[in-house]
Length: 218
Ligand code: E4P
Image (cartoon, rainbow, N blue to C red; front, side, top):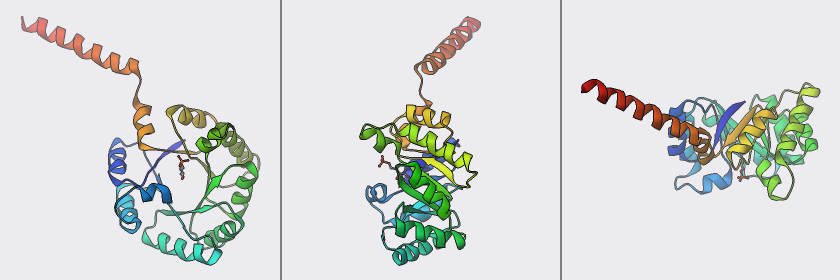
């Protein structure tokens, strides 16, 4: 399973890029609205810091408007992937864009049927939102597993991006559920490194080393 960063914050992207574990980024209008700079400034900066797919979402909700925005965004950098919500006008746009070799990430997916429709329209990526399903008392990880199984069973080409990830347990659960990609907030990525036994282990190794060094100097 590949890891993407779920943010529009360029500083977070630079830090995560240095750790060498991230190979893509997803953004959405809510994430972009948290940043001071315009999205037209942010998007090229993201593309310059990560060599991999960068999802940028359309705001238009009509077919022609989506195509116009998608072509503009895709024209900004070869790695831009267009994010379009799963809806009839959206999937019509996905089909047209796929014919133009513009990759689309179909977003706001909450059912296997929506994922099937997205795959049939030609989506390169499908994003089920597990955290938001958990919020309404359903089990997001199960949806991710079902969509992955359906894609495999019917030999479809779309990759599944587990989105709306809220904590490290979500990441390990979707990895085991077979998601192709998990897009994780920066805070969750930091938490993934952590284990109290790792911290204790480092502390012990260093203190034992220092004791030995001190004994040699005597
Ligand atoms: C990414 O593609 C999604 O837009 C994002 O993960 C949604 O996360 P949220 O449900 O925490 O807003």
